Image 1 (cartoon, rainbow, N blue to C red):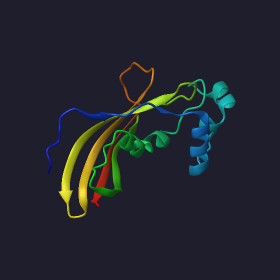
Image 2 (cartoon, rainbow, N blue to C red):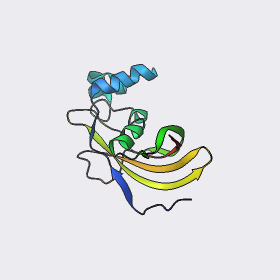
Image 3 (cartoon, one colour):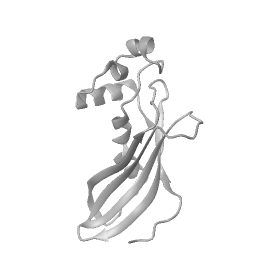
Image 4 (tube, rainbow, N blue to C red):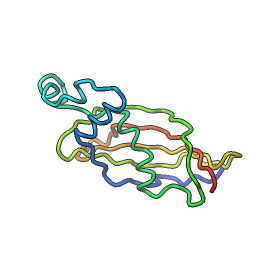
Length: 148
């Protein structure tokens, strides 16, 4: 097993999530519930004052955050998703002007295996303007980085 540095490994830039992105995700996944896709109804009936992003939409941004932070090993041709552990959707992510998340990434485990470099990274997505210190989505992401 490789040595794992303590503390955060990287912090992504802010990633914008607007109603168009939420609706596109809903259409792609066939999850078009009004809580995500109908701003007028959500404003009237939702306890969140409007629509909220799909938790899986935020979770799906892990690879984007990894790329944005230039965390892909330089000698890797590609990565294979190996799985996701300990996923929790801790709070709703309201949609509106300026809604953005960023990913606080930590390295939990790294090990050379026959198939490539196995990594387990921790991800904690924060909502801009939320000063509670509590992320909206957390997960441990498992990858195998295949050598070039």
